[in-house]
Amino acid sequence: MIVGVPTETVPGERRVALVPELIPKLTKAGLEVVVQFGAGAAAGLSDPSYREKGARLEADIFDKADVFLTVQPPTTGEIGRMKEGSTLIGLLQPHTNGAGIKALAARKVTAFSMELMPRITRAQPMDALSAMSTISGYKAVLIAASRLPKFFPLLMTAAGTMTPARVFIIGAGVAGLQAIGTAKRLGAVVEAYDTRPAVKEQVESLGVRFIELGMETKDAQDKGGYATAQSEEFYTQQQRMMFKYVTTADVVVTTALVPGQRAPVLITEEMVRGMRPGSVIVDLASEQGGNCALTEPGQEVVRHGVAIVGLANLPSTVPIHASQMYARTVTNFLMHLLQDGRIHLDLNDELTRGPLVTHEGKVLHEAVKVTL
Ligand code: NAD
Image 1 (cartoon, rainbow, N blue to C red):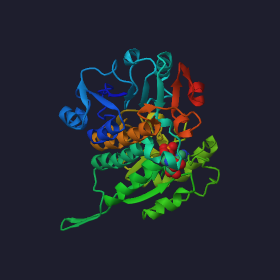
Image 2: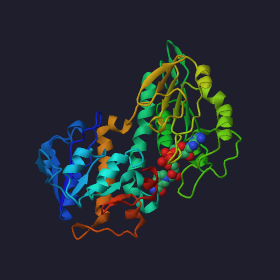
Image 3: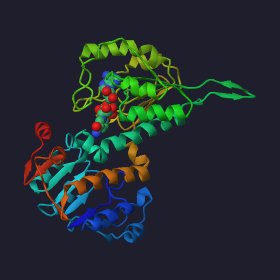
Image 4: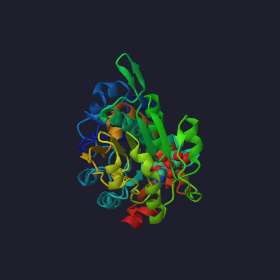
């Protein structure tokens, strides 16, 4: 069975779905690996580095492979060149990429979307979303620090004492916790809030103050550990209760998401107006509509003197480690599917069934069917 790794073509995408160090794991399992010329270049991985680890380099891989490992979803043109019955593993954006999902079904591709991996302990080594969120949380703080016209740490110098920056993190899931750790390491005074009460202990274990807004949040978490959607009244009250924390912060990093929904708006224009000029908001929910009312997805803007960063795809800006981490999750998943060197589909296994979107010409994933 041939595993194919294409060069990503989406503008700005610097990650690659397989790194050379993981090739021996696949070849030992009886697979052949074919990598498109230049696939790793944007992540600092040369063609010879893939060849040295046992891959074959080709100008085109779409008509050759039985299993495709990708970061972004393939284009409809690429899908048209994939073999019928082949397998695809990637971040397929299943809820916003209807045309791609339909094309995969029509081509009879067995497609797995890494975003749909169940959040169960057994699936942790295959949890691409958490791996990428870790990078986004880290990078969000570095972007904020570079935009802020102040230091992050307390500095005592002969020219005076500089007070530390105040950083407020809204949403303390995987990205938020990494943002907290990074801001703290840079010396800022950090505070955080999340609707899931279970998070308080995790935040405090990082030595950071968890803000209590005095709101009823006991049903804020579902069985899978995710946040549940709250009412409009709840969000309005949350905005009111957070006003003073947002407007006294130098930096606000927002990461609040509710799966399958538009991100809740938690920072209003009035709150932005109340912030000091020069302050920075980094909105990690921008691709899901944004937690700040003034965020422009994919853009960095200044409104009322406040920099509002809604840049997309931050993992791609740390492409070496992002590729290493992503490739590990994808490879672990591929190994999970293998039996005697071939893909074996056990549709009763939730780890296989969870991320399965299309198979034998049909869209099998219930939630994706609904969005289609
Ligand atoms: P996410 O990206 O969906 O959401 C980010 C955070 O935003 C969450 O912590 C959520 O509670 C918070 N949020 C939502 N609405 C909010 C609001 N109005 N105000 C403030 N915060 C709000 O979530 P995630 O980071 O991917 O994961 C959340 C949790 O899932 C983790 O902390 C963990 O407990 C669990 N998890 C489990 C596994 C596993 O077992 N394999 C893997 C990853 C995550």
